[in-house]
Length: 353
Image 1 (cartoon, rainbow, N blue to C red):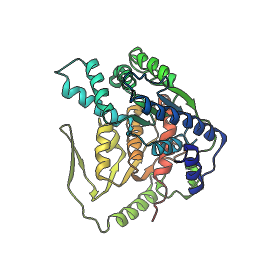
Image 2 (cartoon, helix red, strand yellow):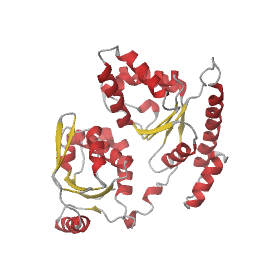
Image 3 (tube, rainbow, N blue to C red):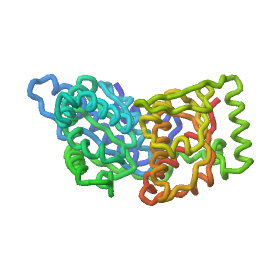
Image 4 (tube, rainbow, N blue to C red):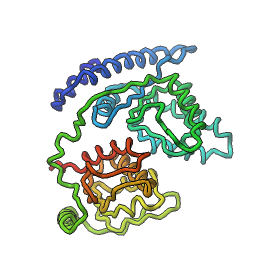
């Protein structure tokens, strides 16, 4: 069997990807990580095996340096029981488990039980683009990850944010400190550096990001929308999430059209966006604004929205008040919004025919 380094070299050659020294250093780290995982599989056969000191990697770095590309390839390479998930989706599953079993036990015990049940299904858990934005998640992450590590579940995380900066300035951040402690003890933090966003290399070919919001942009969107829906029937579609009804007013068998306010002015979250993504393969979002402190909540929803659509590889066509490079941000979200903008580049790139 090929080593991971050999597998990555083959992947880069096949896809004409130029590697840099920083990326190759991370590949070497994953070679070592792979050896630990394989050794642990053997140790688990022994009755009193101990958990390895290294149970994971937390990879952070700016957008476009290749961290997700390398981690995705490592995930595909591993021949073990594994799961890749978006953090928001994972936490929805955890909260559902707690809610369904809350009458039976305390939350801390339930988190232990959840980790134990998860261990029966997987040995490796991969979170792409990890971020913590609400107090409900922050309060339980410490005990949750402690339980995952106790069950010897290996964990791989990618993020744009250093561990110490997670949930920075968040409400009751002291409740989050146990998570920081446990993750630093069990996971190696690694910064992947680089100065080229490979996803932006074809930016001049983008043709589905229209600005400014004028008659010309509207005409272009209408023209492509008619082309996309020519042979599709308009359907009456209503999504129901936990009793909440969300109508898809312009839905044509997998193609949907929304105004920004429909998706981000309402009290919607990851669970809602995941449900929308189940039914839509191509989505139009019109009238994206310039963001600022006054609409920081809407911007946070938009960040979550793009994360979910990116995870589900939804093709987008959008119109905006300004160019993608010039969209402003609320100050507290400026750093994480860089990832959102980079992903918009990718999701609005020309369709492959």
